[in-house]
Image 1 (cartoon, rainbow, N blue to C red):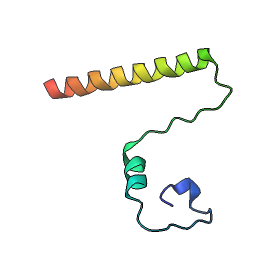
Image 2 (image 1 turned 120 degrees about the vertical axis):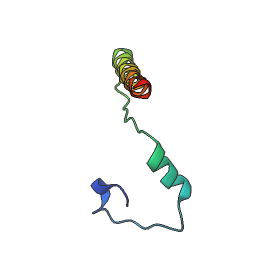
Image 3 (image 1 turned 30 degrees about the vertical axis):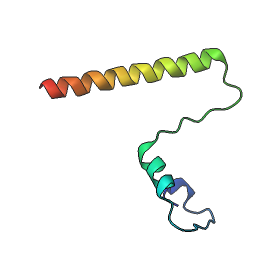
Image 4 (image 1 turned 45 degrees about the horizontal axis):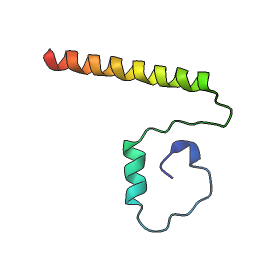
Length: 65
């Protein structure tokens, strides 16, 4: 397995997994559980929005240099 946290888990890989590899390289997993209420979801949304806003501002600042 390519995720270090799972390296000691017994597993088998059947063939190439190009789509799995693509998701692993390009995706961001947000774990959720059934106990998330609207307030917690709103908090998560606001936190991500703030992060991406800051990221975009930093990126734009570097581009304009």
